[in-house]
Length: 244
Image 1 (spheres, rainbow, N blue to C red):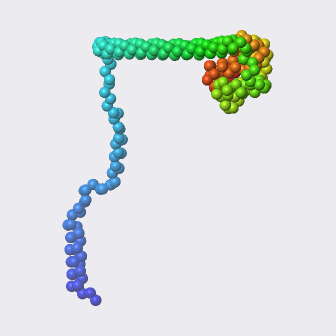
Image 2: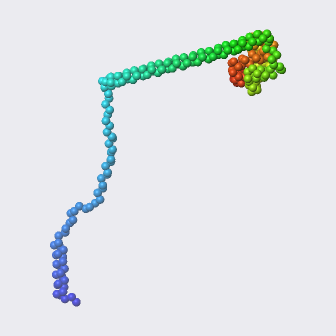
Image 3: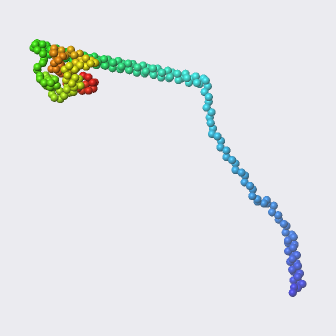
C-alpha cells in the first residue's frame, strides 16, 4: 500500500522527467538528404580525320623548267638509239654480203667440179672410142650372155665392182629400161639400156651403140663411175631424186 510519502516521491520524479523533456531542445538534422544523383551521360568520342597535306599544283613555270631539264636527257637517249640502230643495220648488211659472197663462191666451186667431171668423162669415153677405132672393130664380142650377165662381167673386169655394186646397178637399169637395148623414153628421148640422153652420147663407146648391149653397158657403167663414183652411190641418188 503506497504511502503518502511514496506518492509524493513518485509525483516529484514524474515532474522532473517532464521538465527534462520539455527543457531538452529538439535538434533538427539540417544536412541535405543523400539521394541518388543521376550520372551524366558519357561524352561521345569523335575521331578527327587524318591530316592531309594538300599537294601544291605545279605552276606552268615549274612545268616549263622540268621540260627544259628533261630535254637534253631525252635528246641524248634519242641520239644513242639512232646510233645503235645504224650500227645494227650496218652489221646486218655486212653479214648478208659475207654470206652472199660465200654462197656464190661455193656455187662457182660446185659448177667447176661438175665441169671437170664432165670433161673427164668425155675424155675417158673419147679415149675408149679411139682405142676401139684403132683396133678396127667394135666393142662387141668381149663378153657373152644376156645384157644383165654382160653387165655383171664388165663391172667386175673393167671397173672392179663386186656383186654388191652390180646389184645397185641392176636396180637402176630395171627402173630405166629393164635391160632392153632399144628402150626409148617417149617424153625425153632417152635411149638404150642406160637411157642415155641424148642417145648419141653412147657413140663415144662404139659406133654400134644403137643395137649393141655391150657398147651401151660400157658407156652406162662409165657414166656412173664418172658422175657418182659407184653404182650404189648412183642408186642412192636415184632413190632420192627419181633420176640419175
